[in-house]
Image (cartoon, rainbow, N blue to C red; front, side, top):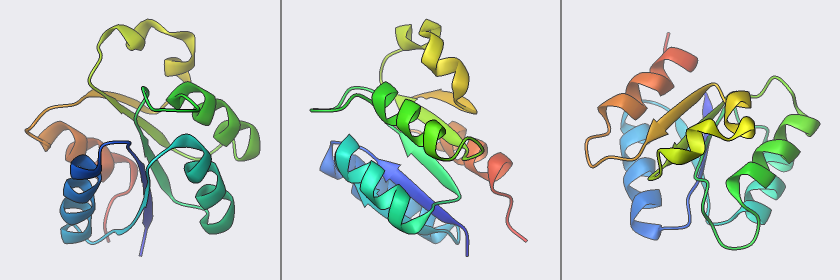
Length: 118
């Protein structure tokens, strides 16, 4: 089963993503901040990381940099409420940039594209 690490500081968002991606057949791990995400990524090597940008402590860009330094081929989807970060040079390192919405269609489509189910 493919593993997704969701990095999101808002608890309700984490729970929603866990439910949705578990229903899609993925094993989902949750991290509430960047430091926790980096620890979990090192211990459990996810197949995909869904990463928020604005979080307390380490920003999503800090996490992205450290993740890619450790494992350059790990796919990352930036999932943020802010459109203006798309122009940040670190965003270019991500596989997808999704603006958060109550409709998860675009995010789910990006996940299926990166981690197709058998």
